[in-house]
Amino acid sequence: MTALNDGWFTEVFQNQGTAFSLQVKGKLHEEQTPYQTLEIYETETFGNLMVLDGCVMLTSRDNFLYHEMMTHPALFTHKDPKKVVIIGGGDCGTLKEVLKHPGVEEAWQVEIDERVTRVSEKYFPELCEANSDPRANFFFGDGIQWIRDVEPNSIDVIIVDSTDPVGPAEGLFALDFYRDAMLALREGGIIVQQSESPLLHTDTIIRSIHEDMRKAGFCHVQTLPFPQPVYPTGWWSCTMGSKDNPLKYFREEDASNRPFVTRYYNPGVHHGALAMPQFMVDALEDE
Ligand code: SAM
Image 1 (cartoon, rainbow, N blue to C red):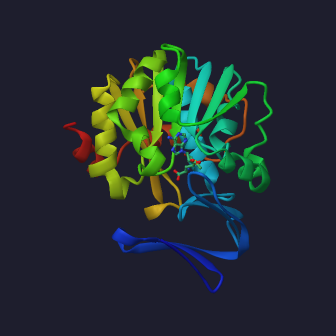
Image 2 (cartoon, helix red, strand yellow):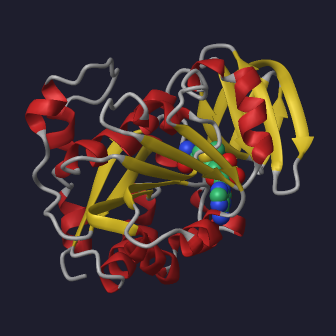
C-alpha cells in the first residue's frame, strides 16, 4: 500500500506495522504496463525512485548496495565466470556490475517487462551505461521459461534479481525453477537470488530457498545479509547456491585487485557478509 501526502511518498508494510517514507519533489512518470504499475518519483535526497505495484524497487542514491552485493560475491566466488544470466533486473544495475568483470564474455538480462528497462534508460541512465557493451544481450520475456528452455550446461552464474515472490516472480522462488537452473549451469556454476529481509523472512522465504536449492542439488547454500535503507527493515540479503565448490572461499586476491570501482563491495565486506548473524545460523542450521 502506498500513499502520497504533503510531499511524502510512503510505502506501508501492512502486516509489519511499519512504513518507509521519502520526501518527494514530484511524480515524473506513471504507467500501467502489461505486468505492473510503474511509477518514478523525484525525491528530495535520494535522487529518483522507482516503484513497481506500490513497492519501492530502487533509488539513485542507495541502489549500489544491492547491485554490488547481487553481483560481486558470486562472480568472485566462481573460479572463472564467462557467461552470466540475470533474471529480472530490468533497471540494468546488476548488468552494469556484471560487465565490470573483464573475464565475462557474455551477459544476458532476461526481464519480463520491457517497460522497466525503457523507463530506466530515461530516469536511471547511470545504471544503463553498459547496455551498449557488445557483451550485453537482452531478452524480454519470462525468465522461468527462458531457463527451462536454455541449453543445458551453458551458464556459469545465474543472478535472480526479481521482485518479491508474488505474481510473475513467484515461480522464481520455486523448486522447479532451481532444478532447471541446476541443469542450465556448467560445472562450478553458482545461482544467486535476492532473498528478502533477514529480520522478516529468515524463517519463511530464506529457509525455503535453502531447502529448495538443496533439494535441487545445490550442495552449498549461503545467505549474505547487507544493508538496503529503502527496503522493509532497511536490511536485505542474497542467497548463493553452488553446484559443487564451497562458497566460503572466494578469489580474494582478484577481488582486492579488481580493475574497476565499487562503492560498497570489497574483500572485507565479502568476508563480513559470509558471517551470518546467530539467529540465522540457528534458524537455518538444521535445513
Ligand atoms: N531490486 C529490486 C527488488 O528486490 O525489489 C528488484 C529490481 S528489478 C526492477 C525486478 C524485476 O524483476 C522487475 O522489473 C520485474 O518485471 C522482473 N520480473 C519479475 N518476475 C519475472 C520473471 N518471471 N521473469 C523475468 N523478470 C521478472
